[in-house]
Length: 68
Image 1: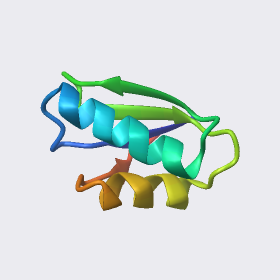
Image 2 (image 1 turned 120 degrees about the vertical axis):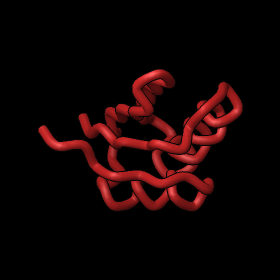
Image 3 (image 1 turned 90 degrees about the vertical axis):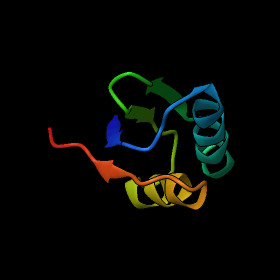
């Protein structure tokens, strides 16, 4: 599982956009967005961390892999 800090998510539209972006590069991924914490957890089915990060950024959000 990889966790990203995404400070610019603020609403359910953001959650939907990020989830769709991740699923576009990894259809089998499990995506969990913690809106209050501004964190996105992804259990990838095959995509690399770099591909997941790029998908979130291409959707218009800032993504930084969380430590630990």
